[in-house]
Length: 369
Ligand SMILES: [Mn+2]
Image 1 (cartoon, rainbow, N blue to C red):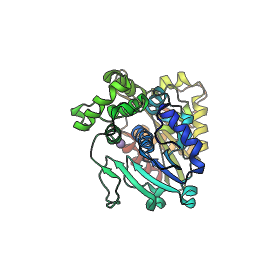
Image 2 (cartoon, rainbow, N blue to C red; image 1 turned 60 degrees about the vertical axis):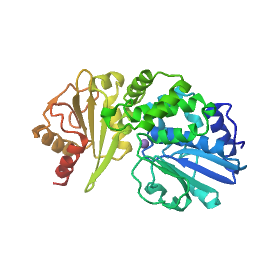
Image 3 (tube, rainbow, N blue to C red; image 1 turned 135 degrees about the horizontal axis):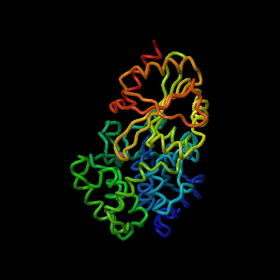
Image 4 (cartoon, protein in one colour; image 1 turned 60 degrees about the horizontal axis):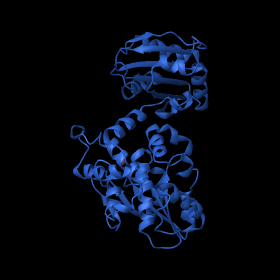
């Protein structure tokens, strides 16, 4: 691919990568961390673009990889919003469904650039010898002391370090879509450059100042919108809401799951008239004996609610009795249509201190008893 193309901005770049990825003599995969937050995605895409622009090697492709399945992209609502605002469609991005590091590794063409982390996650540990570059803002794990292309600096966002690399080569070249991705991400990561949040550094601030005019956005408007979209789950189905922030555990033969959902039960019932059936379907799909859903919302004030579901009435009774007698401060809420009394409990939770982190060990102990 031609290294100097800029026309078409990031979508044009991503299309070129797609066209050339199979026949590349060298495939440089630029990858964020496995949590795949906005910083990891935006920094990977923009760093791949910057590396491609800088490179003069024919037959080399720089591919930004988001290490999650494609279907999980929409769960990151702030990322889905910002990429779409930048004119980049989900279909143009690369996910684990699109690219196999195993295949590239066997071909001998793989070079890996880690961004927003500096130690490959468990799933990628086998590719340690392929790592050829690191750009990160986390603590240095010391794995690559001799790497030439290695930038590890404690700034507020990995996007700040990527922006610095791009801007060092001249402002005129940066497409407005890349400027928007980088500036928006830095704002979200530093809580709008607020010193009180303890994340922002002078470099984050300098990058935002340089990028915003190119992105053509106002700082406050962009930050407020991103902050809103981060918690805007209106577009998500019940199934997606349940898996967006989900953790699974086991106690003996009992497999159980706990979902955090940032929506009131009242709104959820309105949004989905088949809520009980959908909870049941989710639990079945994960082969769960027990599903706990912890609802939390802030309008008008911070409130917690709890849903208990088990397909097994005896297990349901055990958990339900225990929780009602506990200090969670549960009081029953009206059951939605289709709710089976022997399997479902719907509660307001007065004791706000019980987050998933605090409730899970309690449930574990109960199930092991
Ligand atoms: Mn980060």
